[in-house]
Amino acid sequence: MARPPVLTPQGQDFPRWYQDVIAKAELADNGPVRGTMVIRPWGYAIWERMQREVDDRIKATGAQNAYFPLFIPQSYLQREAEHIEGFSPELAVVTHAGGKELEEPVVVRPTSETIVNSFFAKWVQSYRDLPLLVNNWSNVVRWELRPRIFLRTTEFLWQEGHTCHATQADAGAYARRILDEVYADFMESVLAIPVLRGRKTRRERFAGAVNTLTCEAMMRDGKALQMGTSHELGQNFAKSFGVAFSTADGEQSYVWQTSWGVSTRMVGGLIMCHGDDSGLRIPPRLAPTQAVVMVVKEGDGVSEAAAQLVSELSAAGVRCELDARTDTAFGRRAIDRELKGIPVRIEVGPREVAEGNAMLVRRISATKERKSLAGLTAAVTEALVQDQDLLFAEALARREGSTADVGSFGEAVEAAASGWARITWAALGHEGEAAIAEQGVSVRCLLRADGGVPERDDEPELFAIVGRSY
RNA sequence: CGGGGUGUGGCGCAGCUUGGUAGCGCACUCGCUUUGGGAGCGAGGGGCCGCAGGUUCAAAUCCUGUCACCCCGACCA
Figure 1 (tube, protein in one colour):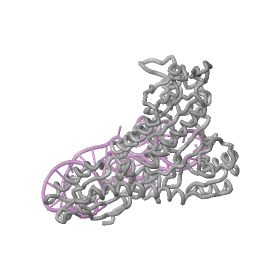
Figure 2 (figure 1 turned 135 degrees about the horizontal axis):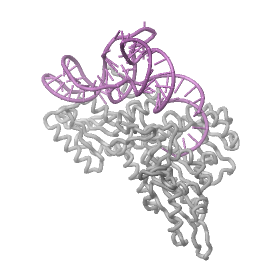
Figure 3 (figure 1 turned 60 degrees about the vertical axis):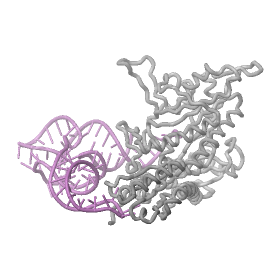
Figure 4 (figure 1 turned 45 degrees about the vertical axis):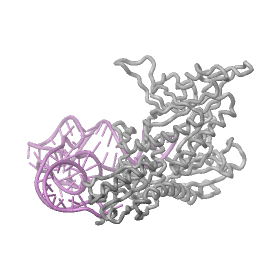
């Protein structure tokens, strides 16, 4: 009966556990080119759910989707000095095509600020064209030295938003709105991942931005994951690309811009924030399949009862599927669903049908209860709501319990071995930031004392959250 | 780029020291028995031993070179 565990236990080797879950839950495979990945149907279904939820929120802020090209003239990248300096080490450049060498090499987009702005320059003429709010769902390529599937891949999928505003205040407010209403809301209410919203230090800022806002989450091993960023670009790109407009007074002015993105990295965050030694745990609001009705064993009326449950659950709005593959051992199927993180399992067999009930097995609360067939749909919908909250509460408690208030660099580094440290920015500063970097520890973000997002780096009484990161 | 390690069926590994023509577990196929927490038994299929040279009657094994990948340090969603 005692079998070796399906997955390497987290406590034994976390990175190994991560690789194991991805393989066993059939999320993805490594591609043939280093750093590339094949996202398998279950992994992609999760991504599609993320896309849907994020896309709805983006549109609610007034942005519209558009598409910009994969290939960008190399010269475009060079127009913004900091930007090219930041990205040049990781660019993939096409020098040959159509059987001959190209006159001007073409880069595969690492991000689209340059090509987007070259068109914004044409589209924006008047203050009446502002704000211009555009979002692009795409793939991008950044040649990675040390790839890690979903977390840091050479090619990844994401959305990148690009906006133009008439004033700095408007741009700043919009960058903040994306952070709050799109990213943090999605991560907390759908992914059930608590995030700290903060401001990046100069060192951690996006290449070409004047301010980078971030959502930082803690993984189960205590490391931080940057789940999403929203940047204020100031007028840097506007000046490089000539994105200017006539104000109501007839003056020429450069636009103020933002850009912001979340990527398939969130899938990695989902895995590492919620997964346990039995596999994935997908929050109900995200789960592509929320409930699976399993025929445990054939018998009188079993298939009919199972089919009936599926149709009742579907009618109640539960994303639901039937598993009647009784040619495969029950234990195998049950474990497979656990690995994939499906929130609720309903087990029906001859015993249950005879008694007029079914077994409700919950992945997140790890409970198993007998329920009458008549009350099952209500019990499932209630369980889905409760377990969404339970998962969030658990992650929040873990983060709180693994964050230490410290007063020195040394203590911060020590705390970062197992979690995060909170230290005043005055005590740390840029020198401290450089010092802890030697130990592989970085400032994840700056916060106000009340947890609010700072407007400036030099506000008094700021706190730095420091830790190891992916 | 610096340090450490590994390349053997789809996956994970043994075999190498002391050369003799490749094996184990999982997975896969077929059959029977099973089916309430990774089923059992039996029978099968599948390997350029990373690549290229060399030594030898004979190389997965010894020698030389080379490539790839993994882990740890400087950058990134």
